[in-house]
Image (tube, rainbow, N blue to C red):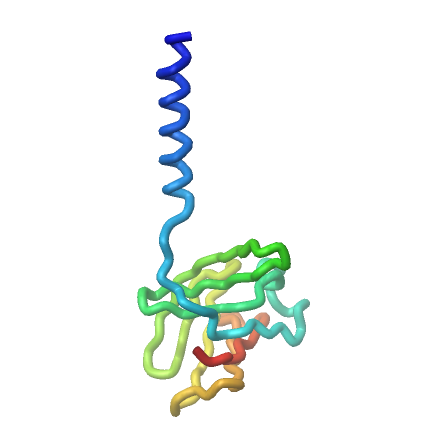
Length: 129
């Protein structure tokens, strides 16, 4: 019996340490973009499950979907912007380029992103903060 106590303690510590590393803290507050697929057949299949998107100051672009039972999935990519042009890198095998309006974007405006290769597009609708 005494041999099992250290084993049980180590197992418990290991499980608690793993659970801490699996849930990193994130700083996002709310989603501000809605993903719109006008022709789902024209975009990679991996893009079709997502509902929302967000651009973060650290250069990450995060796609997400909320499920009815409260769970959420996300997928993260890198992006860069120069002026009003935004490039999302290697998202499902393609780079995507979108041109933002020159003025401040208003809630309800839509920005279209086209694949750099010319095949496929999707749009993001700004929902506000």
